[in-house]
Amino acid sequence: MSEGLSVILPLLTSPSDGVYATHKNLKDVARQNLKMIILTGPGERCMEPNFGVGIRSFLFEQIGPSVSSKIQNRISKQVSKYLPYIRLDNLQVIDFKDENMIDLRISYSVPSAGLKDEFAFPISQ
Image (cartoon, rainbow, N blue to C red):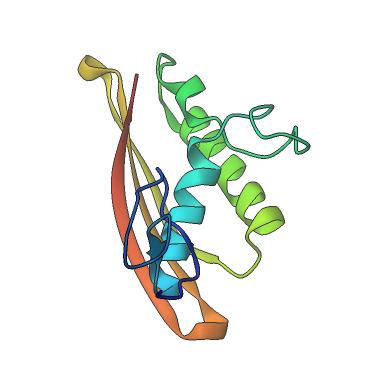
């Protein structure tokens, strides 16, 4: 049986890892944790009513400088509270008005591990 740092979400079965597949490196764990905090809405996580950005609640708003700033501030506050080991280096919010999508582009680092990473992912209904 292999050892891992955390389970992969959504859960996947894995005969080599035991019951569920696991992340084997810090980069994958940090990326998953960052995505979970962004995708989770406040009130969705048991016993942590303030956890989560709730990015989907912004999908049908007119994204402009004030809303982009609100999203960036919410992400920054959540990361500093719940993922203090992650430093956000760059965060861009790109709006696709015709498709009701928001595209987040995030560059971040884990200074204690000397890790830098970046990713983009679309948020849609």
